[in-house]
Length: 489
Image (tube, rainbow, N blue to C red):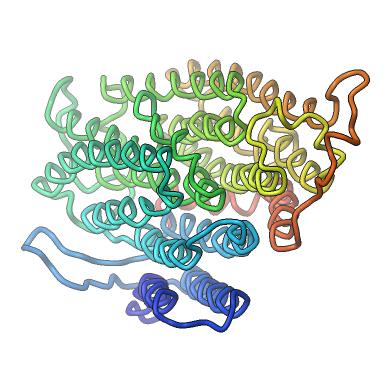
């Protein structure tokens, strides 16, 4: 396939966003059909590129002898590309009904579609500089979505998000300049492109990688750089679902994988203070996120803190610096996206139908919104790791990989503690929904309450089923991830 087609997943959303802003549609239905068709077209092109990947790199232009802008689709990029291409159309459909209760819909969908192309650019980046450029543009395209309400809370969340992102960009830029000045600006290659360096504590290579980890770790919500994520929950649910499950946070994880496995050499990093320091931060984040999720009564924030913890599950696998750890990380990255985006969808459905945000206001809603509650139950069980769900397979692969490495034994302990906390904060939601207490008046609590329409329920059902289909048929995907970790793809 011609490598010039790699431009289409970036250009189509950009052109579509401009048309959304300029065309005068007859009504909402016509506009929504146009938006969904644009998103589905982009998804079809991405999947076609994944199935028939171009063998060559598309070099668009060069800034200097060492710096260029190029696109290429390899195995790791395909994983991220498939993830966004599958979940974006479902989120778009969900957003049509959800945003009908909001304002400035045209502006929302313009930025929403534009972000699709930017995130696709991250997946298709051929080198660290190209990835960094798309990564920073993503901050600019998602900022209007976070601040969509433009009230005090939204503006505060936007400032916080931007402050954290700019600080992270500065750290990541140091890693970028160091890598490019030492031969790391080449096309991504598994095993690194910087060559063999002396494994000495405190050398510049380790500091450069660690600062890059911190910089990209901001988007991956590594403690203590996680604060923007719960605050961003004030955005409309379609945005928070994508921020917390797919686009922003997974882009942060994806960038850490690229930096660690495709620019710096894992063998050089293994056993150094930099690996131990990053691994310690990840372990702390796993427990902190789960603990805060259990302590938080705001439903969307509970899922946001859960995301903070679960993202560090993935980073734990990456930082084991073994092929098995990378396989576990990729397995959990895909499964977590499916489970968590659906949990946010369920929270959004409750908010949309009842305007209730806190758990203590949701007692007995399970009878009034049975379909939403069922989808939440299924996705919640998967998040807890019930076999053979997506959550179980991800944790299983991470556990096996951790057991084979000395540093991983501490990781196993963190995963076990977090698993218990996950069961507690997930099942406490179910108990509130369906077991509110003796002599509870279900009729009064559910007066006027009902499940949302098909535009929101269809994604809920598909994703709830997907949380277990992913686990049942995970063997082919794990084999694919293993080929990526071995450098075959």
